Length: 258
Image (cartoon, rainbow, N blue to C red; front, side):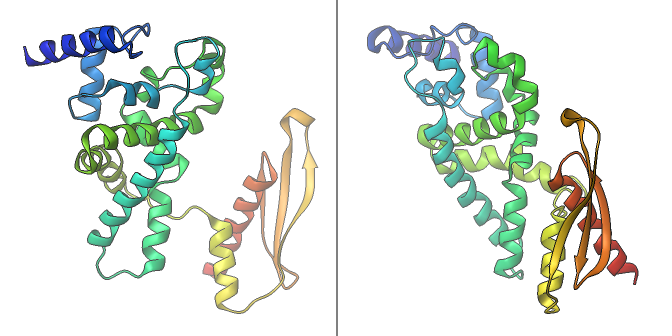
């Protein structure tokens, strides 16, 4: 009963203020509004924040009532995520140094981790994008959904405060990340190899493309990594960056087995 009363209060508020929220097709449904509140774990009192957080810039092209996308809220949410994750790691690992905390935070707040969090809450079902863009969404969904996730955090912070934003992050990002074995492994093998070389004062770390195969739209690159002209690893990939990562991974494995 309280939910229904609050829903009609918000609808009346829209009628009086002209706030765009309930005239968006798909969001006018009471069930969808209720399910979105369950996802974020709190009652919504300022719908405009969430509408903005869910609005991709492509949606503005076909909807004259909207004047801005979720990019500003994404900026705010990014800062809130960094603060909450930083505090969480500071308390969880009291004996670890700044380097460990910084590296772990970067793994928790990168695009892939935020995309996984967005998928856990089925954020794509609520995202407002243009019809044309939605057809191409699978190809660029990682960036779009991770940005929208940060925007949602910003919206919760503005609407309900830091505690509610922290609770949302704990449930959708932090707790699941630490439950998955190996989730926080450092997969940036180039960075690991560079760190290895620097610690041992080794110079002339270089990556060279030694082969390119296949047509322009489907190339396969082979990259070789050397330290002081010694070949340590070779890797293949669909682009130079991924091939370099594989080469670095193989180099680290060779070093480990030496």
